[in-house]
Length: 239
Image (cartoon, rainbow, N blue to C red; front, side, top):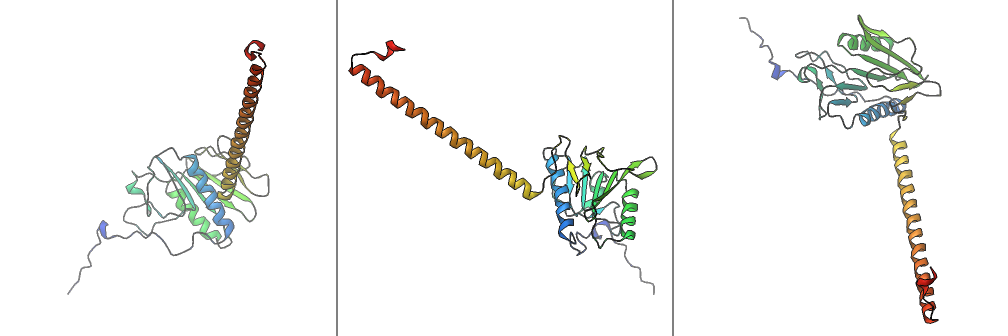
């Protein structure tokens, strides 16, 4: 007797949301993932058709859950902001992430990174960047006629899609927004907010002191005017 194994329908196919591995292997890698993801998301906070995600599973082919990758950061233009358990490209009008970032850790092997490059090349990523915090090395690829081509020099290179600029002249990478503002960490943003609040409080205190001094001056002027009137002098005629 021949038993036929039923072919699973699309509804039965499971697309896992996690592989059980940690998002990052060390604090440097985690910090850079957050800095890049949060700052780019901040850049496009008012654009509802730019989706930015970190460590989210991307499934490019429907019915093939074995074809998957989870970029450290990916940016997708043309698809709305919303909660996703994974990025299933066929449910996103077929739009592939245009920009992808990977942050290296000591556990990443050359074979692993070559496989990632092949994946992003095959599935139409336009810009791909790898940053190694350990040696401050940044590599990039830009899509040309034949696929992803290595960018010759990343010093002061500006992303065609994001218009952000990469500066490698210091001890670690600095990234600048199109308006020249540097990418900030969450701690730095909190410190800037605290400083802004302190400046606001100081300005309010100075305004209150100035108002108090003005009121005191008015009070003294009124007392002087009353005394002049008691002496039979009209203060209005003295002005």
